[in-house]
Amino acid sequence: MKNIFEEPWDPDFLNALGVIPCPYHRYYYQTEAMLAEEKLSFKEKGSRATQVMETEAALFELYKQASLDSKPKELEERGGAYYSDASLNLVDAIYNNRNDIHVVNVANAGVISVLPDDAVIECSAVIGNNGATPIAVDPLPHFVESLIARVKSYEMLTVEAAVHGDKEKALLALATHPLVGDIQIAKSLLGDLLEQNKDYLHSLYHNRERRIE
Image 1 (tube, rainbow, N blue to C red):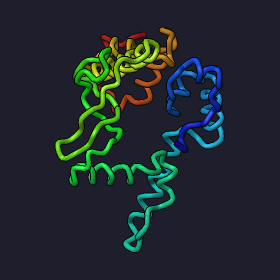
Image 2 (cartoon, rainbow, N blue to C red):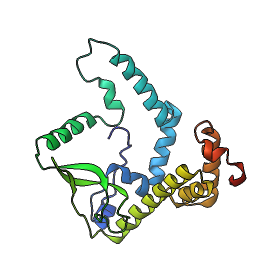
Image 3 (cartoon, one colour):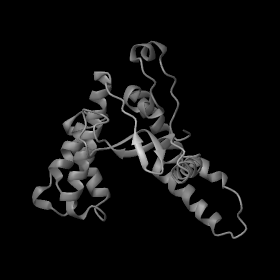
Image 4 (cartoon, rainbow, N blue to C red):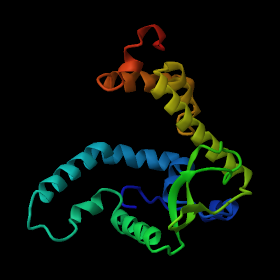
């Protein structure tokens, strides 16, 4: 994944973990190194969002060209260099009933016991013309379950905050996230987020009587 800094994993930690982490886990287990890299990247190239917006603007210009007959190299800078291949393989598995294993987003439906059945999870599933059949992964180590549950709690609280315009839920969401972990930091982040996005988060920003100061 070109959009994730590859801080080397500590061998002793990997042996203790006993499972294979993915690149995104670096944010939770190597937080200081990842934060330092993000700050450096921001100083040199701007935020990740800015970089993606610039890449997409360049791609849209390329897509205007009727003569374009190959996948633009700029797609590799988007972060998902092979998403198009994965998408076509998934369509192939469904249409031709291949029953291949793909990583997809599905309703939990008991696959991970610590999460609600209607929670959306990303997991390996057998894909055929009947759709996706998730592959059960329980039991998980308790330290894995705790991280999954905490991140999913953050996501669910964020959805509640957005749907109901609830600032209290928004604050609780940020305070719950493993990478925040401090109420004052959460309040500061929420204030900045609402101010910077007031044109988009109308129900949260303009609900002044419930604004958290």
